[in-house]
Amino acid sequence: MRLEPITWERLTDALAAHLDGLRPADGGPWLKVAVDGATAARPGALAETVAEELRLLGRDVLAVATSGFLRPASLRYEYGKEDPDAYYDGWFDTAALWREVFAPLEPGGGGRVLPDLWDPVIDRATRSAYRELAPGGVLLLHGPFLLGHWFPFDLTVHLRLSRAALARRTGEAWTLPAYERYETEVGPADTADVVVRADDPRHPAWTGLP
Image (cartoon, rainbow, N blue to C red; front, top):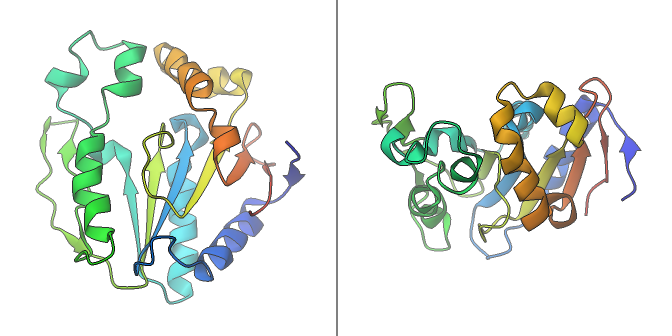
């Protein structure tokens, strides 16, 4: 994999410009983008800055975090609070993401997306209002383990950390085997359209655009 140094500002500008000229693969009116990465890689920060740049270009944008689609604690902690396998395939409500985020953005859909579903702090539904994404709008879904679910993304960006950087920057070390499993089973660096190496937060590098 060939990587070239880039600044976060140039990366944000390049992604936003590319998305502004991209057309949905399914022929519908909405673009769907993944910003995939371990929590330590801060995929939400990149998603939000790209969203801001797209808004300056006149696009309606909705950034959605997978952390708002966690399953209830009774399901997440069925095998204990520090089970890496449960974290990998049991914490995030992928069925709800399909139903509340992707289905409304299919061709012929109404565009009414639920921005979040579950508050893990109080372990209750958020009761957030639906957000209507205008035709021509862009969904930016960010969080870990996004690839490998057959989500209908038009562009996938993976923030990559080396094993050493991930271990150094992850506070909850028990989650590390889940990320190793993701690397083995999905191979996000080989699957994503764009890979960004984020070992040094000050000096990212990337593969460029497809």
